[in-house]
Length: 329
Image 1 (tube, rainbow, N blue to C red):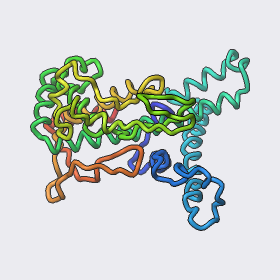
Image 2 (cartoon, rainbow, N blue to C red):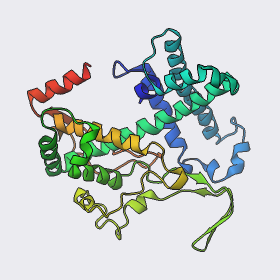
Image 3 (cartoon, rainbow, N blue to C red):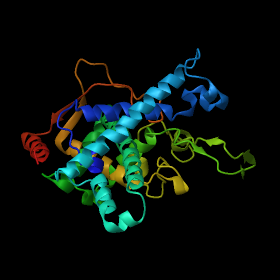
Image 4 (cartoon, one colour):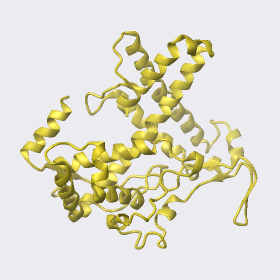
């Protein structure tokens, strides 16, 4: 995502900019869960000064805001410096800044204001697209370890369709079982089980229930994704259910005008990552380590499986070389 949004390629595991983004993303996800802070339930608490006993949440909020500002500013400023040095790689920010720099954009308003919009749009894209992908891929790896027979079935389909190359997006239509697996991943352990909280813009009534203006609406996506009337035995990981083309996908990307605008990107990203993983590797539990469990954390807007150990074993020497060559491009 850093490469896509900013043209920044992390060169090693503990890249400092990656660390900045990870910290801010984790904090924003935790802050977005209304039940984590009493001020979301008792609004007048926002007037309590930060030095007041018991107001540690306010000091934490100030610290998290500073981390969020770093995450929005540092990669954006880095891309601007790359553009100034004529070294910038293609990216969303590079493209938007280039459009802003032309005469038409200059005539439409203040350039600093336009830059600020781009800064915040880019900063919003990154946590929305990176943390969710990590969550889905972690669940995918967990499911493949817990269900090796499903992993084998997916690999047989991939081998039959793709052969000795890496997957491409054009392969999706030819991989119905793998598509069913990805749908089941998103249903079985939805990335955002409570969805994104929204505020009701005006008084409304739904099925006899009055929803006042200003009320916080929290969609229970977990319950919808585990509705036995729609998905029998919902706690079971069963991709076969989605081979029935009439079965609706779980509503994990939201609803209506507020549906996730990056849903197609997220699904494509998950497809490429997961299919490449199983084309090249066998995913197994790490010998001598505790067996993974199908449990998730519940303290953040975005959920992850509880920490577990896994090992990637190359399926063959030729496939190991294949991924190595791709990484060196």
